Length: 91
View 1 (cartoon, rainbow, N blue to C red):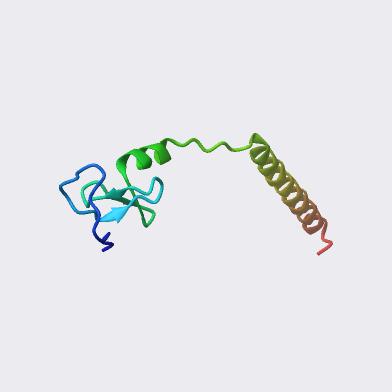
View 2 (tube, helix red, strand yellow):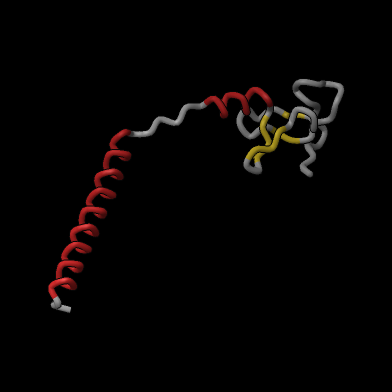
């Protein structure tokens, strides 16, 4: 357990600090500290991080669909050629 020496909680000055918020660097007590992905955060910083919007490019999705379509097209054509050759008795 992390223990912050000789510091008091930023929200509860009567309590000793338990950890330091890795975002705002405030000392926080055990009640105020929330561990997320192995890192301690205060409630306000954790709320802000959870609300953060991740913007993704629509180009990446389009490229993925195009690549998958080409793979399926190639596999389908390959399967049809093999099946035709098998039916014709070439194999």
